[in-house]
Image (cartoon, rainbow, N blue to C red):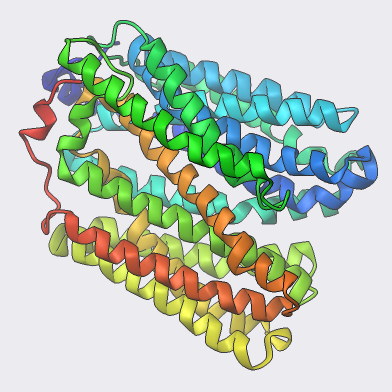
Length: 485
């Protein structure tokens, strides 16, 4: 079934299968969110079992994120062209197969290749989640659906270390670290079967062929930008990493110019420039960038502080994130269903203020005696941060994509996810200065973590300011939705 108009959308909305389809789509998004961080907890086991070098470990952890970020925009456009359900199922199948490759890896080289291919598979799979939701659910249901999406994404990010720790310590079938990848096999197979029956097919009638020059330019530009941000810190920022960052600017500028020129000539660009004419979309991307940046700084430093600064086991460190997860769920449910419809963008701004306040409170608790932090003390600031995360992340996807025409849903979804990955990479890069830089200069782990929290709070303050660019009432602009894709 191809969705091309409002009448068809309303007709399909009466079919209860759309909610089952949502569960299948969200399960795939959750798998990806978990796999981004699940491997971090197993690094000691990987070094011991496979003899992985430090450089190989860096690529095993960073290769996934790099391949994922590079392919998101193209993956989204492929769904617009060939059918979002078809491309989604292709991505799930590839993700499942590459998870098997990772799980049976006999050496670090095989695991590294598997992780890069796994990230590329996720880049095909994930953009179809948001774009399918955008074109499948009617407007009056989208806030609820995107709220659930925000919760699942947040939980997956926090659950990664916990899932990894539980599987590694359980040592299922004496497989040590391998179940962190093999667990995707039954999930992926079930997802494929379910998707075949319950996910609607949809595609753009206007996106008839792929903008190959645009793909080449954006992939090259993102590669020049993401590789140094992903690997530069571990390698102490060699000259080539700085050169790549500088070279990324003209390449991405050329991509923007080329896309605008192609659109003027009546072509079908990879990223339609008309998307940015909607202020809600542009402002939403800016907030997403800030959110990814602060998350990149916080979660890396926080995980290391709990384990290396406080000496907590991986499982205890993972369990300590439960208050954040629960608070995120509460914040997300309240924001999308109750607060945002009544108070608009103010709710997201309050979320940013609460998150910044949580970071500053954490700093105050770490400052006196960072090594004596208790589980209860840790729960207070991260609960506040979880509430703030929920107030922001749950409605943000809906608000950002609300003005996107259906024919560009895949491109917009890919771009939205790419900005999150770019922000996270920027955050990790900044960590080399505000966290690892402090450690290298002789400060203790608690001191370095406390110092990085100032930057986390500042990132949320910038997000609050960026939210002023959103319309106060956060209602879709009808004119924007008619823009050409």
